[in-house]
Image (cartoon, rainbow, N blue to C red; front, side):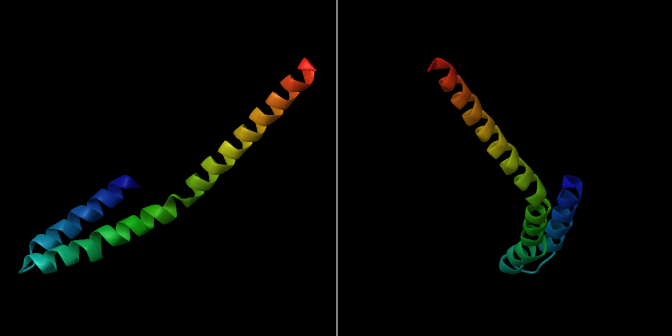
Length: 75
């Protein structure tokens, strides 16, 4: 997935270099390159973020359960 994003940024950079002035080049790179790639990578990363969040919550619950069980044995 990242190789496609890198390729797209390269193409957008080449398009930006061919612009007649710097402002148009920067705008071209931001609007055709950086913004779309950032949006796509964010959307494609959503399932992974949800999965990591759920795993962290399960690990926290398991830690709290183990702590509660250990505390119950002490009493």
